[in-house]
Length: 135
Image (cartoon, rainbow, N blue to C red; front, side):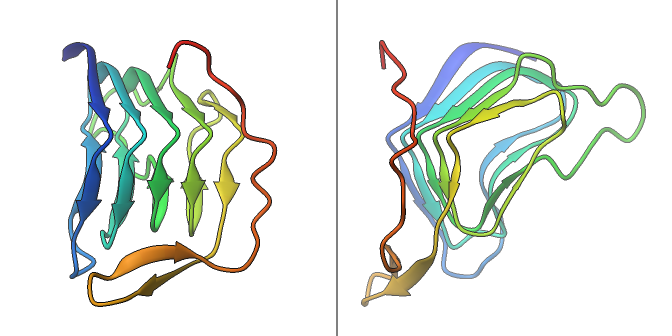
């Protein structure tokens, strides 16, 4: 399915029961962009199922992970043109080898306060993030 460069951006996506997926690109989703989102309290923060092409994921803060755990039941499983850049995640960044990755950082978080808001633990070195012009 061609999403015509649909943007998913500047959202706070939260759930208290560690179920569901924050941002989910199902199999055969193409031409979609997720940026500047904060996702926590989910089973998966951002999941990109295979195959899917030209999925761009950048500048998101995600607890627990960004992954492409699931491939198709039958058929191709490639992800050409996909980009995962400048994201902060707590647990895992798991993508196929053809996905371009750069500037992503694993960081510790605690969940605090009555609103269960994620807070960075300690001092995290995020100096290597890349500037993406035009965004």
